[in-house]
Image (cartoon, rainbow, N blue to C red; front, top):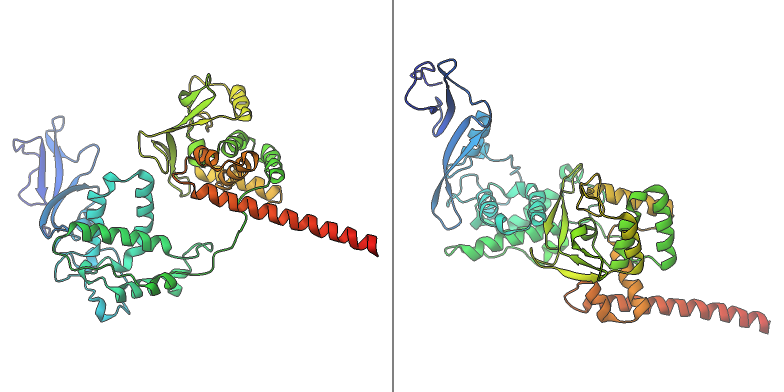
Length: 431
């Protein structure tokens, strides 16, 4: 600590910031303790304060300040400012990066991709839904290879190098076996760069993506599953199996199928939004899951395709009305389907659904198959595409038309099967 600082001498301030030797712009916070008549560490909170200058996307320099628990954290954060050195940034592998990419830790402009990520989180994140923010936070570590690169130098060759890095033997071994591509990472990177281009008047950057990149990011062919809905027989078998292996999810599963709801909408249902007299439920909230192990679940206004404050009403089918009557409101809990008054985590729901699929001998492994199943069943029952569109709250009839094509294909296969049976019968009679 600073040799001139005397803890036992009051210097006219209850909170004192003392500079740390061999650092510039980093201070240690002390609080005057009247009981011992001396300065001591704060009883709670962070005790290191740092400031730095950081470039912004419009070319200006911004003074930033932040508190930290440890000196290492403060030094690392400070090192990512305008005078950032390679060691101060997150570790980046630079071997094999082509010279045409012009990658260097201290670039000509001083505005690196890492600086852009920080600006994007600062200015864009507050405008995004929590689920979208979580998606960005999930993919940002995949851009590690680009962190130290000058944003203006990100060109097609740099994208080639980045994708090849992601597909290196060292990296491939760390991915889940179910990963088929880096499509999401590319789409998010496009969005970040577009945000930069749209707000930076002096930029010469052009989106660096080429047709070849779409092919390069593919790891393996996606499994083809032509039928993404359950037949009525399969659905009833699944309900019965679910009642046996995961009974807590039977009622929400029935509601999801009968009302064509997304799983995030079903598990956000509240008694206050249920109009018992009209037999209608107002869909106005959804669950946002942090889909990591033990990830938290939060209920937010709006839905996947509705902004906060918007809603739509769905008429409830008789089976759903009856199960709601059996459940009855809980005075201590606003949720209809819950885990001790808390939203179920996505892992719990997915595990319960998939356990029943497997036990029933069905090939499906998804919660969204319930929405598909509900749509095909409703179209089968009514033959009305507009009704399907309204129940599912789709913005256009394209989805309803898609289910109509599925139904036509299913009808065609059924006719072909009947024709084969009739042909066998005819041959046996002739023979």
